[in-house]
Image 1 (spheres, protein in one colour):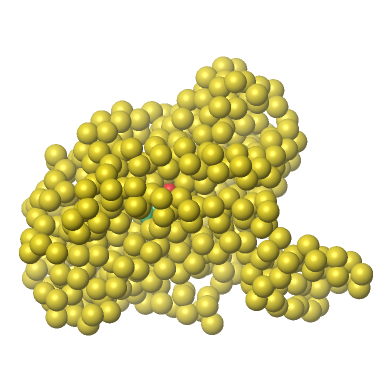
Image 2: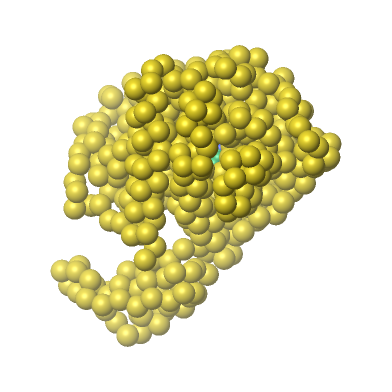
Length: 490
Ligand code: TRP
């Protein structure tokens, strides 16, 4: 490793470019695809409230810490954390933040690319007018058909990974900045157009209620872990993506406002996406708990019903694709920057990172078809006639179809729930590794860096604000994360 990598990867043109890149990273499939579907699975309003609390109490403070760390050392997260750990004489454990982030990044990129491949398919379906006047049933069947076809999924996944590779290999300045400056506002306008449509549907009130009515009885510990994990995922925190972008941020710029803008825009996009999707779900009698397919079964129906739906629909999915693209680039950036610091050319580094993530992605591809019955952490709950649980069994691994058959022989009603490989990749990274990365980042910044050097780097508008943030990062954020993780896992 060379002694100093300052400027090796370049510096953003201004604070606004950083904001653009960070918003590009944050706003992605997490907002438009994932937020609505997990909100649906975990019961709506109660989940949304916990998510909002997590963004404020944990996400925003941790984001500031991440940018600050990156800018302080100006290297890839792995080297940033190695250097700062030595500089501040912190336990070696903290140097692991960068490595853990790199591992999480590979797994996240692997499934992110498979899902983004679905978007590619929907761009095509929209453009050819396939969904014009379509009913919910057709949308469901189309999505089911896509998932059942591993070859098609692999081709789409490959195409998306190539798109990511092309931009990453050229460095993030030229391609990304200009595209995002133009497209992020358009994405926002498109969402508003769809919101306008969803306002006119009879299901709007029900959709609104579902999102914002707080029903505490629906809160489970798993829902709280998922909400916390999602606040990290959606803000691109906990694995070094924002740290890497922070490393390219001009020195001396204040951080407070920057972080608030990114957090606000990201949250707004997610809420608007929810307000677009749920009214359509209820209007067309679809299932809010449909899982990962939710958006792919609702939006085509809505878009197919709009006059000019072919154009609006195509533009919309292209924009979601771009949002996913700019996010995927930021997931790959820490590993690529690390390899470049190790002496690889940017092109080689890209090939290495993207191929590895691509190969891991095949696990997600098969999770939806050939391997869908092979599940881990399977619980079988026996239900009585009133639908109450009367007994349960747990299997570390089970072939779920065989289990179902066996239960049919014994009779009775059972609910079988397990995790496919995709579910495991997702849960392990998003809900465990990202929050864990967040705790370590908060503790390192709050307890091991000197107060004065942190204050100097953050440049918050007032001393008072700084004191509040430091209190959050030292006590509130780590305690909240640890409490949630501990309760969830044990
Ligand atoms: N935030 C992005 C989204 O919501 C995904 C993403 C980009 C991400 N970079 C990340 C998730 C880093 C976790 C870690 O779609």
